[in-house]
Length: 268
Picture 1 (cartoon, rainbow, N blue to C red):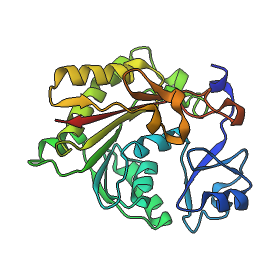
Picture 2 (cartoon, rainbow, N blue to C red; picture 1 turned 180 degrees about the vertical axis):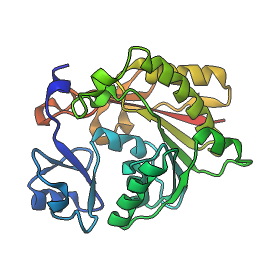
Picture 3 (tube, one colour; picture 1 turned 60 degrees about the horizontal axis):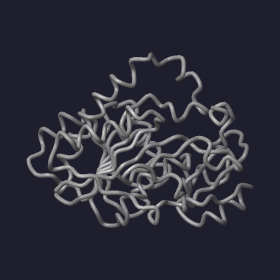
C-alpha cells in the first residue's frame, strides 16, 4: 500500500545498448535490461525520442514478452496490444508480430509508436473472440495476451483507478478475461507458448483465471516458469505452481515496479 502511494520512476525499453542510453539520459540500467530515470520532463524532448531509440514501458510490463523465450523469426500474436509496448519489444527481438486490439483509436497510437521506432507489425482492429472464431488453422508460434483488467497494479501511476472501479468490476472482468484467454489459445499452434498477463494485484484476475481455464479445457496446460527463468533474477516473483507475480514494493530501494501477473500455458 505504501509503494502504491509513491510516485513511480520512468522506465524505458531501449532498442540496443542500455548502458550507453543510461549514460546519455542520466539514468541507470535495471536488472531487466531497461533504463530507469528518477525524473523527467517533456518525453519528446529527451535524447533519442525523435529517432525512436526507446519507448516508455514499466520494468514489470517488459517481463511477459521475455517469458516467450527466443522469438526471432517466429510469428507472434500480441493480443489487446495497444498502445504497443510489447509489440515493439517483440518486433525489436526479431519476431513477425501481429498486433490485435478492438479499439481502432488505440491502434492509431500503436501505429504512431511503430513509425517512430522504425519497427513493423501487422495491425488488426477486431474483437479477439470474433477473430479467433474465423481462424481455421492456428497460425502463431507464440501468443501473448495482456487482458483488460482493473489495473490495480498500476495505482501509483493511475490513482484515479481506485475510485473509478466498482467492487463488481474484477469479477465482471474475470469473465471477459477467461473468454479472451480461450480465444487466444485457439490461435496458438500445438505446443506453442501462450502468455496470459494482467497489470492486476487481484487473484480474481490472475490465478483464478488460469485455474478456471485449465480446468475447463483439457488441451491447455500450465507450463511452469521456474526460478532459474526469472527475468532479471527476480526469483521472488515466481509464485504458486510456476507463475509470475510482481508487486509495487519489489525493487523498493530504487522506486518499485508495477504489479503484474503472468502465466505461461501450452496447447497439448
